[in-house]
Length: 62
Image (cartoon, rainbow, N blue to C red; front, top):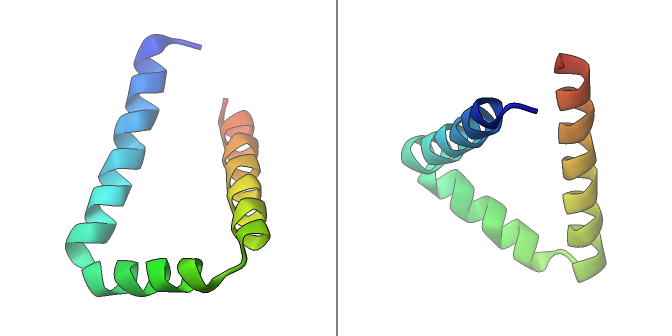
């Protein structure tokens, strides 16, 4: 994998994250409160499923 591609993917993730905080800060706050209310194992599973989904999308795109 090319270093430029990795940097472009990181930049894209940062742009999306930044836009979420800039355009809907109250929604982000509510999401964080919902995450804090979830059990630790559920958060762990959510993180794993999110990472796997990202890998599948990346695999399909390349």
